Length: 113
Image (cartoon, rainbow, N blue to C red):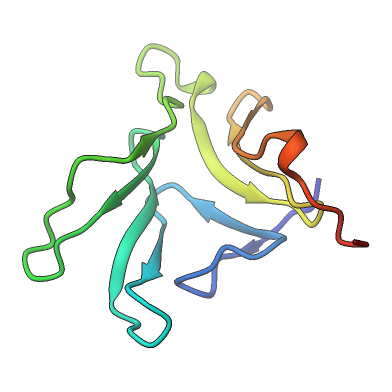
């Protein structure tokens, strides 16, 4: 597994980049409007969350997706980093070394195609 590079581009998680706890990636509102739209965050509670954020107030709306990778009873079973491998796999790395896959294998497209 590659060691990864820290996330440098705020609207894209590129292969070999990682998203750490507390990190966020924002989508653009449109191709020409770079205002923050939807956000993907790895929360302090170790859940990966996808939701909209009100630009004026900063209020985070109800999530479209929550990974369920938090574990208050045993932190070694909780996620701590989102990985995007060169192969296209995107997953949450769990502290105990396991992976929580976010990319189904049947949805991957070979870079050679």
